[in-house]
Length: 123
Image 1 (tube, rainbow, N blue to C red):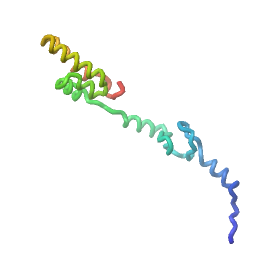
Image 2: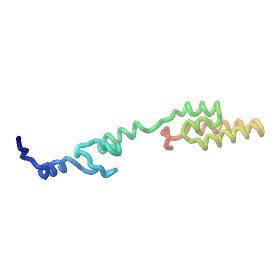
Image 3: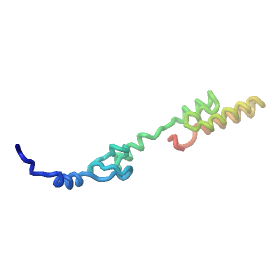
């Protein structure tokens, strides 16, 4: 029978030196961890920046304008502005119902507003 020269009290400080608390969820993680295995947050600033830039949804202004041309408000809905898209749909439909010219003007404004703005969905 062989005896192990290390005891649990000797191992405890060694393990504690390898761990740190995650700044986001306070769970114990390795000191050289680049991403927390519990909350999924990136601890490395470069990896965090790369993940944020790749996760942003982009929209295409030409597609937004084309969708609003086909269905008034479709471009706004494509951009993630659902309520604004349905408001444009009803406003343009009301404009066409009242008379042709207000409908055409509202439709043109709807198309142009669908195509302008920041191309991330958080605008």
